Length: 155
Image 1 (cartoon, helix red, strand yellow):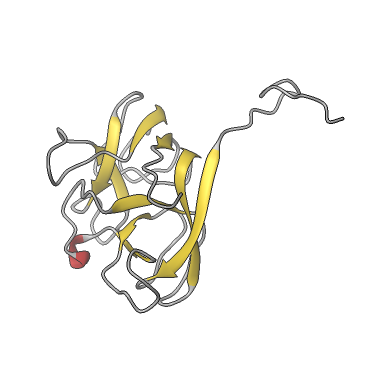
Image 2 (cartoon, one colour):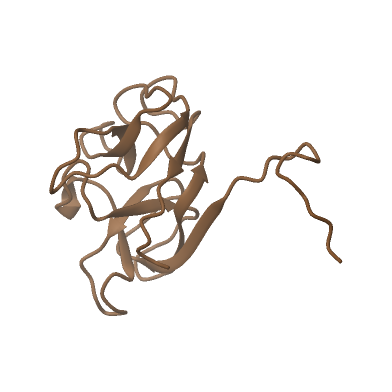
């Protein structure tokens, strides 16, 4: 019979996380915020693209699904975290406090894509995909953490 273990009993907190393997549409770097891509060669919704101005995604797009857990090049399989605790994402143009919802920021750091910003009010085209659980101290840092909402896109 297995021993029942509560999170943190042995001094290690076990954060819930959910990953899926999808196909990269373009180059993706670990920690990039990614959204559903427009390529359908492997099937609709199975490609992800870095969230930046060149992908025609606007700030806070409802196409965002999570954060890349590894780097990949165009066409490769890439592991994406679609729910749970994540400390790989990078802040955009400003610090982000705890308990603020986040969306991606296309106009954040010059030349850098896939960053976070505090979420605007949700509407038909803007939807936060997570909440800050450890603060980001400044612009363009990855010293904070978010909890990605499980939107149920991939089971």
